[in-house]
Length: 189
Image 1 (tube, rainbow, N blue to C red):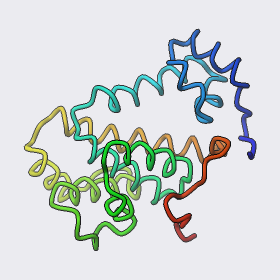
Image 2 (tube, one colour):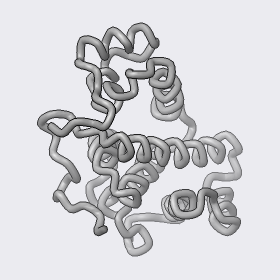
Image 3 (cartoon, one colour):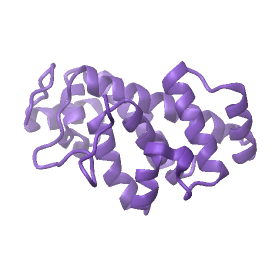
């Protein structure tokens, strides 16, 4: 296992820090939180933001996971791709659709809603904001639901931030986890 730029806390210390910060104990088992728990208040804020969308969100879970997988691919973030591969498959997202985010414009399995949110994701990763045409497509496909639209932009932005944290701090995969499922293929470059 490689070491992060800021070493993660040993599991016992991470669990104690998680308890103190009101972060669920099981999060302390993840490399990202072992690193983030060096700053317990920040770890709690990150956990609260992500958990709100993961467990209490209004955005369709499948769309959210496609967004996260696209961010992992665009940013070449092995940890994000690998962790959310497992999350997405447990939610029933097919291997074909997960691999489809690599080149979503050519993937036949995506309809207008998937294409709208993936185009918005590309905009945010590339330009920092959703373009007007892609915003209009998201409004149309998500029935102009303000809660879902705010959550979509927040999800894209939050997991883009997580990718930057993971890559900047060089957070390693957990022991025994193989990267870039299912085929080990990483983005070029």
